[in-house]
Image (cartoon, rainbow, N blue to C red; front, side, top):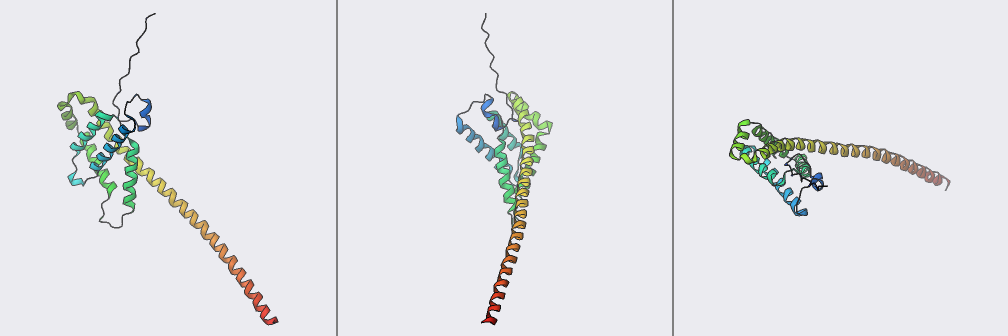
Length: 205
């Protein structure tokens, strides 16, 4: 019998993979330091996505995301969720209309980035400049769509959680109010009884 050598599968760049699959996809990294690097780079990327709309340059962000995908080949969606929860919460705490709408700025810039990657001329120019990165460029385009989708998903999740908290507080306050009213009535009844007793005693004595 001849020993057959098993072919080792190559890691395929796939930005759709979540961070939940890091340990079972053959992805090699140096423990927590690699994940920390990915988190830091994702945070830096989103800081760039939250600049003023007039200063936003989609071609620069696309290149940054392309460099990220070439190294790490996947998006950490948990980082996106945390960022969205934080900025939506900040928006909810706004006290003045002049305060910038952070989530609105983020979505607006991501949509500009979508317009950029959906322009065939732009993608063709990237592939012509770096033909060896053709597949990675396509995956980066997909990553932009995934980022847009997950940002909206995280916003909806935040709204659902917030509504659940508000409903709970409303029900809790309603029940407490009924309990307080019952206690108040009982106390008033007891006070009236005590006053009546003392009044009767005053006539007797």
